[in-house]
Length: 227
Image (cartoon, rainbow, N blue to C red; front, side):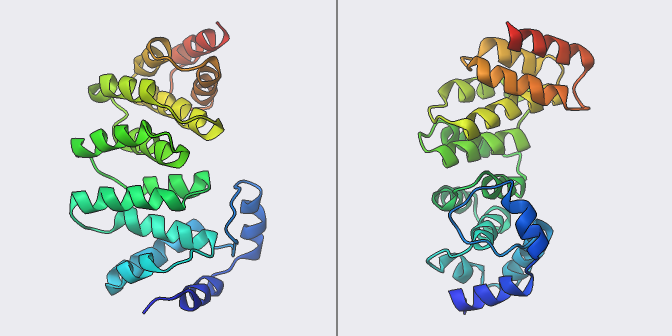
């Protein structure tokens, strides 16, 4: 049976003080940090799921540690369960997120090409809640960043209501990812969506740094961002 005492002992067992110091400069969270590397957390999540006690783990409150929140996200994204239960669980989990890394590590564990997920991710992206919206955008870029979904992605970007740095970064990242998968598609999004010039500059910067984006696209993106 899981409780905070057992969770604390488990995480402390894998504490890495150097990683805690390094990662602390990259992320900002109100949760207490222990310092457990993401590959270790993924392995622990697999063990918890395999044990059959994952629902008990997810039900423990309050969330005391950053790594505990991340484990909840990894388990929620990767456990096998009916689609409707999965989406409900992820939406509820978004309320525990207070940091970009927890959001993105969670979403990276969700590999699914079901168009129901695309529809739900677009609905998440339209939320006024920053972390639910970012979750939707990151799910889209991780699973549906292709020309087949281009019209839906355009609509999703235009429907974004949440504000702030982490939303702008996610939209720019999405546009870059689309371009990396299909030359010209991301450029089209830069030109045909209602994104700010800040987002266009973020997208152009990410394209500039990507080895999967052509030099021609990088040049066009720079011109649009500077226009």
